[in-house]
Length: 325
Image (cartoon, rainbow, N blue to C red; front, side, top):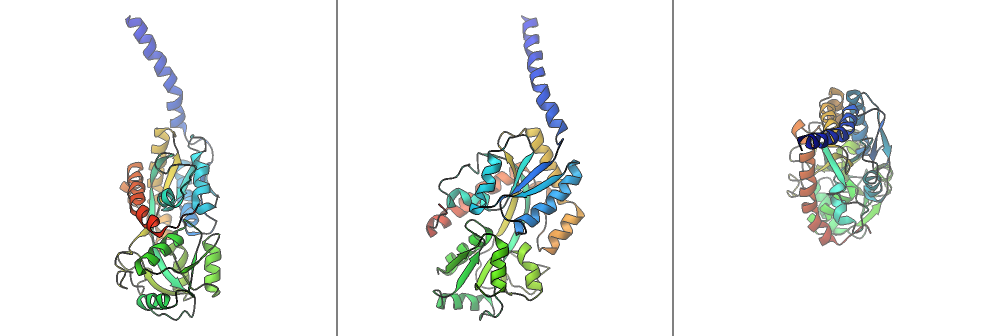
């Protein structure tokens, strides 16, 4: 009997050995990091900085592939359906949580279709307007848009984009619905804002800081708890009278469900190394953000974030009654 048991144990150990060896050898080739938004946008900027640093740590290239469409859900669905071998990952923002309510028919489940790797950064939002817009401060902006609600236009980068979510929250806070102009990405929206084709928008500091510093747009507020070192003259939304409009656009990395735990752990370790890279720290600082601390660049922290953010945004989206499908 003991011989039989010993044989079974040996057979089981042999069957597990190849998987363990495979996990230890990862990565052996190029890794593709899917960004579910257009190239040149805020999330793409974050992804490319992190991918470059992770490439150095892993000894294999991490390339960024932009798979935009449907508020980030097309790219997310691509990763959810990818082979769970550690060679396809997703860098997504807050849309991973809000899509659970914005889209009533998703090809994936944000809580069940992925392995969580870790949080990357949380980027503040800024409320900005075209050059020459009449209002000079946040209260002036609020008064103007409420009085001219039928004529004022709000630009966003598409349903589910950070700028769409920020606009939804802003309109809820001031209890006024405005004409929204959706674009296929942040770049086109910013181009039309600079050209005066639309009136105002709210977008991540990764995309607006340089425009604000150059005086190319009128800036009213930042959604962080405190003023930013890079934009010291820009008040917070709380200072401007919108105390509850305090939030950031957080980013996280995911792998397809079923990816080996050892591979996910190695990814998380590499992410932690990347977020301590001086170039990443410096480049993030120039964009008015900072890397997440090591304890947040973990699977547990990211999972908790997704769960809490789904709970936060679900009632807001349902109250607005605006869905993407």
